[in-house]
Image 1 (cartoon, rainbow, N blue to C red):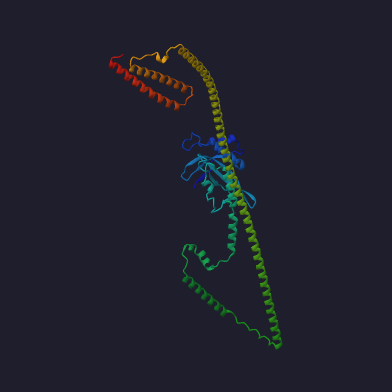
Image 2 (cartoon, rainbow, N blue to C red):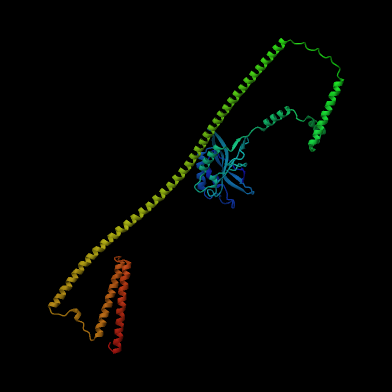
Length: 469
C-alpha cells in the first residue's frame, strides 16, 4: 500500500495552459533533481486539460507522495471531487489522482480522501481502509488509456457503490446508551454491593457455581428465619365473622352471572385475537409492499448504474475507435500521396524518355538516309568500275602463299570485331541497348576475337619458322 502526504504547493483555482505547463515542468526527476521529471509532458498536459474540462471540480497541484519504504516523490496530482449519482441525487466524492514521472507508461495512483465529516465504507470492493483505489481499468492500463475515461469509470462504479458516507455523532449515541443503562435494574444487586464495598474485588476471579448456590441457599434460610420471627412477634388478630348462607336462587343467579362474565371474557379474547391477527396481516402486507418497493428501487438503481457504465464504456470505446480510424485514415492518405508523387515522377521520366527516343529516332532516320545515299554511291561506283572492266577491290590484294591469305583474313576479322565492340559501347552509352543484351554480345564477340588473334599469332610463328617475314 502507498501512504499519501499532501504537502503540495499552492493550488490554482483557474487553471490555464501556461500555468499547467509550469506545474508540469516544475516536477524534478527522482534520481537527478536538476532534470525535469516527466518524459512525455505533452501527453500529461493534454490528458490533464481533457479531464479538467470534463470534471470542473478537479484542479492540478504539485505535492509529495510518500511510499511505504520512506521514499518521497514530488509529483503532479489532480485534487478535488468527482460526481456520483445515488437515487438520482448528485454527491461529491473527494479524490486525489497522482501522475508518475513515466506517465502514461505507469498507471496513475488514486486515493479517496474523506473529509472530517465523512468515513470510508468498510470492505468496499474498490477502496481499502486507507483510501487506495483498486480497479481493473488501472490494472489493465495501456498507452491508449486516458484520465477522462478513468474518471468516467470511477463515477459509474462509485454511483453504484459509494465508497464514503457521513460520519455519525458518537457523543449522542454514547450518552443515550448510558442513560438507558442507568434506568435498567441490576440483575445481581448483592454482587454489585459487594464489589462496591470491597473496592478492589473487580480484579478477583468470579465465584464458582457451587459457591453461588450455597450462598443463595443461606440467604433463603436467613429470610425464612426472619419471616418466622416476625410472625411470632406480630400481635394476635381477630378472625372475621363467617359469611352469610346463600340461598339456591342466589347461587343460580351468581352462577349465571359468572357464566355471562366468562362468555364476555371469551368474546373479548376472541375479538382481541381477531384484531391482533388483522393487525399482523396488515403489517405483513405493508412489509411485503415495502420490500417490493425497495426491490423496485434497487432494480431501478442497478439499471441506472448499468446504463451509466455501459454509456461510459461505449463512449470510451467509440473514442478509441474514432482515434484509430482517424489515424488509419491519415496513414492511408499519406500513403496515397506518396504513391501519387511516385506516379508523377515516373510519368515525368517516361515523358523525358519518350522525347529522347523521338530525338534519337530523328537522328537514326537522318543516318539511315545518309547510309542509303552512301550505299547508292557505292553501287554506282562499283557498277562504273565493272562497266570499265576493272577488277573488284577484293581481288586487288594478292597473296604469296596460303599463310599470307589466312593471316590477312584473321586481321580483317579482328578489326571488324573491334568496330562491332565500339558500336556496342556507343549503344550502351546512348541507352539504346540494355545491359543484359550488351554483356551477351560482348562475351560472344570477345570470344571470337580471342580465337582470331590466337590463330594470327600461330600463323606469324609459323612464318618465322619458315623464314618468311
